[in-house]
Image 1: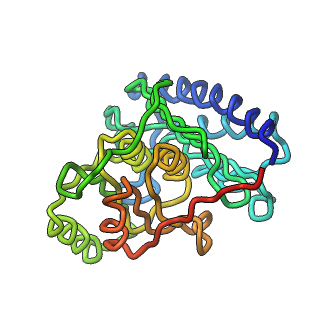
Image 2: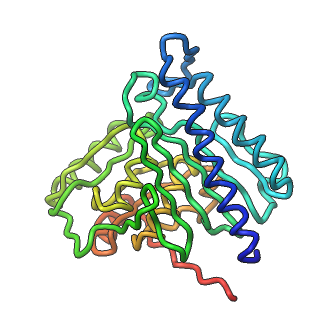
Length: 273
C-alpha cells in the first residue's frame, strides 16, 4: 500500500473516530432511555453499540469499498478473510461501564493491512481523550506525543489485567497470583482498549489477558507499538478471527508479562519503501 493510501485512511479515520464518539456520547448522556440487552453474564449490548458500529461501517464502505470490515456487533464482511486491508472496530469497548454510567469506555478503530496493524484510534468521549497511533509515525494523546514508561520495572507501577467470562475462574486466579508474586499490582476499568492505551502513555506498565478479541485490542496495540512498547504476536494462529492471549508493555517488563500468559513478542515489521 502506498503512503498516500495510508495517509488518506489516516485522515479519514481521524474524522470518523470523533464522529462515532460523538454519537456514542449522546447515547451515554441519555442512558435512562437506552435499550440494553444481555448477550450473557457480564456481556451487555445496547442500541448505542449497534448504531455506532453501523455508522462506522457505512462510512468506511462509502469511502473505501475495497477494504473489508470486522466489527463486534455486525461481524465481518464476506471478503474479510481474503482482503489485504481490513478495518477492525469495537463501537463501545467497555459496555458494562457504559450502561452503568461510568466513563471507562471507548470507541476503537484499527486498520490492518497484510496482517499488520498500521493505524489505531481509541477515543474516550466521556473523558475527552483521543489516542492515535500510526506504525512508524509515533503515538499521540489529544495531539501530544506519548510514550511507554521508560526504564520500567514490574514493581514500579500498575499492570492492566483483562478478564472475560469465557475464562474459568480456576484458570484466571492463578494468573492474578503469579502477577502478585512478581511484586506487581493490577488495575481494571472494564475496557481492555483503554487500559492498553494507558500502557501507551505510561500510566500503566503493561497489560495481560488470557484471551481477548481482535476488536477489543488492535487499535490500542497500534498505539502501544507507535509509542515504543512491545506487544505479543496477537494476529498469529488466526488471532484476528478467534482471539488470542495478549501481553503488552514497556520493553523492560514485557518478558515477565509474556511469560505469565505464554505468548511471544511480535516482530516489528519493516515494509520495503
